[in-house]
Image 1 (tube, rainbow, N blue to C red):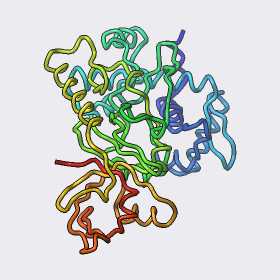
Image 2: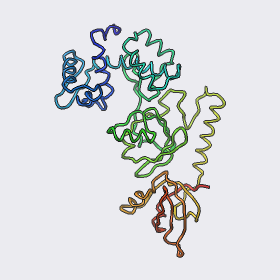
Image 3: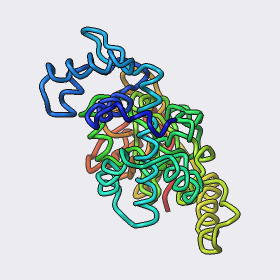
Length: 338
């Protein structure tokens, strides 16, 4: 029985296979140095445990590459992860714990939750597929839900999605989290450009993001996530209250207004007028120079003054003053602000 499938494994062994499962991005072996950092122990100790798990048929260890889970090891890891993530949902949504607190408590409960309790907990929570942090919850057969994962840069204007995973180094991940991009966050695509995207968060704040980074952020379209607390930008669920539907109608009205908003070349703005950059055209060094000066999608720009002969034009953007020729500013499309 699955109930007894973890019986031969110590809690330490269970933590190893769960950690490998969580770090096993793109099915690439997890370096032992990374495991040593996670557990704050020596690589020698990690090596010894991985070899022990390999002898038990749970892990495949490749020298100089790292550790991967066998099918049996993956099944056992998902068995534990399912319980952990169900408890995270229960503790946050039903008992009001902060996610960090729920995670710590779930670490204690995951090893002692029998099948009957896990199944009834899943039914009580209406069989959630994802945690509040956007992590998938394995099903009762210990397999992950089959949902289409996209890169953020594949989304079209108006689509909203749930951030699922960021495939990048630790420093870049920290930088993105400070900017608001983290697992569990919902974003909507407001504008696109060759080099970047303009994102909108649930609080209506916006962020310009390069396509280089967007390609490394995995998301799930909101239509794939059956969670009532996630905003859907194009349709309100039928079971929402009138107040919630009104909120969704407001968002839809904002989108309609946005589509009707006038987009003009930057050189058409008058002195004192402001606009939001939605697209940067041009080619080569000139285009790169404009973006280096802060003229990227999402930036607010204001016309300060125009030279006596009409060229160049002085603007302010991100607190800086800069001058552009009309031929250059004509390559930049802006959304006119009242």
